Length: 312
Image (cartoon, rainbow, N blue to C red; front, side, top):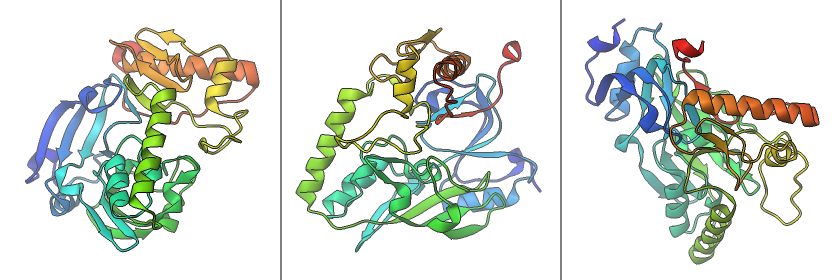
């Protein structure tokens, strides 16, 4: 098996690549390697040749991710233009893993297909599938039929949604496997009505979430085990934001990290925050919520990599 630097690629392979500019929170140290494959064949050949002892970390848009300040001892794989196609075939929508969730929702709506729940979800399709993203009472699991993946050893596989065992913010996708495309079944809808619904969802999001700031979406999973439905009868007793609020941690700060005054479950980088600041703030929130309610919040933001030596 080959070392990373010995593998011929058609895409871009970069050593010691800083990752802070690739995450929405703008924090994180370097990856040992960043590989941006030209297309599926390039990805397959690279993983088939790569020493199996080298860790692989597929990374989407970094919209729900903290890379620690010491960086990642792995090959980070980030898909780009060769993986962002969107195709509508009858009731099915086939989207590349790098396609933006919002673009998939819009293109489907234009074709009279309803995947409107994706419109306000940040990030790309690969991450949405892996985390079973959802909002307004709908989830990827409600529409996903199959996913196309490349295994850690460079084998292409088509998996059914059932094989992923999708559940609230989780799936059973094996470590190092890369989602390259997903097929959804989308119910029919009137394009104008779907467009109006998405505009309404965007307005609601912008009125309640700090969309103009550096955040990574929801920081913690709802202990209730589901996302907000958006309905008037939605209950909030076991919503993370309500528990954080009740514990007095809305607006709490550590360095440049802050729990947003606008939405208590959104962590923001107000400027100059380190990954350590963000993670420390999150743990302080978890401790305070547990002291106040006896409930232990679980991180929704994925945290990966190593702390710097001074923080160990």
